Image (cartoon, rainbow, N blue to C red; front, side, top):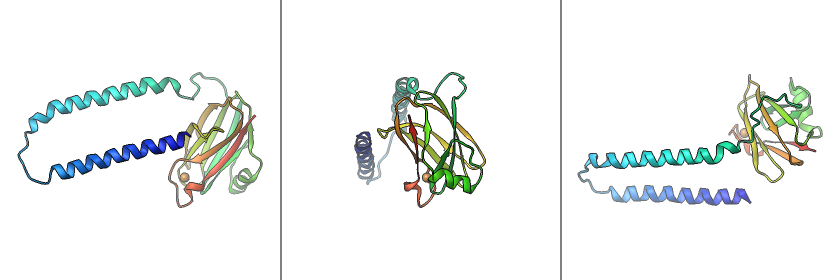
Length: 185
Ligand SMILES: [Cu+2]
């Protein structure tokens, strides 16, 4: 599973960071003179490496953004409200707490597979991260749910199944269990 792989990558990077810090601590225990000018060429080399990583990363990922590039009119609009600690997702606008509760506990909204959907995302309390995961548990799109603002996220979801919405913005003590759900048919 990709999450497990991501966890091992995280462990590897964290271990590397610990090693760098440990090396720095043990290599600077005794005071000694340092020639600062010798660091400048090294710094320039480091800058080129960072630039190369950035350019390669952009080239590899930019073309694969899931967001539609053209100015198509959305075929379906889905209304989303984040509130501690759940997402209300509905085919009709959610304007108050009663409608939010109804949207939270009703049967999941159905989205037509392959159609362009516009999620209109807002929040009734604090900032939340509206993040859409496909049936395999891969992140396919995300935007912020912000109080006082409506953020529009347009997605074309081709794979049918149950999609989950998780919160990717630390929003309080119940953040880890903040969920939402909708179906693509
Ligand atoms: Cu959260």
